[in-house]
Length: 275
Image 1 (cartoon, rainbow, N blue to C red):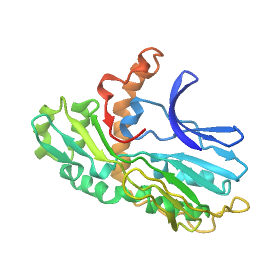
Image 2: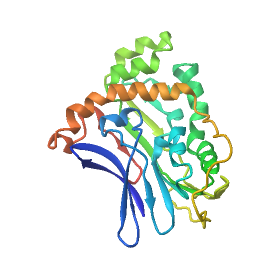
Image 3: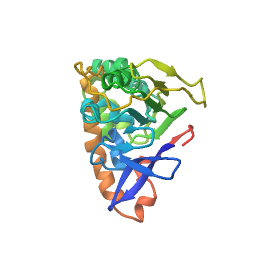
Image 4: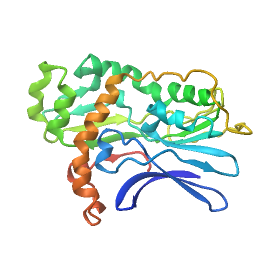
C-alpha cells in the first residue's frame, strides 16, 4: 500500500510517499520537484529511493517528478517496477477567474500558453509510459479524481507572470486581488507493462484499476536512447518562476511549528476530490 502525506522531518516539511509492505516494513520517498505553488507548502526531497521489497526493487516517484528525465536515469538498472502517486490539476486546462467576472484560460495568455496546453497531458501518460518502457519495467500511476479550486497565491505577481508575454492583457493585473484558479484533475490512473502497454485504467469517476503485471527477475538496463519529453520548455520556466514566488511563503509559515498547522493565508484552497 502506498500514499502521500505532508510530513514534518528534520525541521522541514516534505511531500512524502509512504510505501508499506504487509509485514509492516515501510519506505519513505520525498518529492524532489514541488510543482509551482506547491513550494509554499513543502521543500524538495534529497534524492531517489529504491524500496527493496519482497516483490523486487521498486522505484518511487510523486506527480511532477515524472517530468524530469534525470530521475528516470537515476533509476535505470536499479529498479524492477515504478510506483507513482499523483494528483495534478490539468495544467494545460487551468483557468484564472478574476473578481470582475472575466475568465482566462492558460491558452488565452500567449502562444506559449497554448503550447503548454497542447502538450501538458502527455507527461502523465504517453511520456511516463515511454520512460517506463525505456527502463524495461512495469509501472503503476495512481491519480486523484475531481476538480481543483484555489485562490491564486501572491495574485498580482502570479498574474504578471502569466500575462507577461501578452501586453494586451496587462491591464487585468489591477483585478488580481481575489482571483481564483480552477482545473480538472488529470485522469491518467493506469497500470502499464514493461513495454508501456496499458493493462488497465479505471472507469469514469471514483474508481480503481486492477491488473496483473510481470516483474522482471532483476533490474533491467536500458539499451536504447532515452525518449524525450513532449512537454514544452515553457512549462519548466513557468514551474521555476512559481517556485521562486512561493518559497517565501514556505519560509514564513512552514518553518514555524505552530503557524504551519494552518495553510498560509494566500494559499488556502479546496478540491472536491477525495484526499
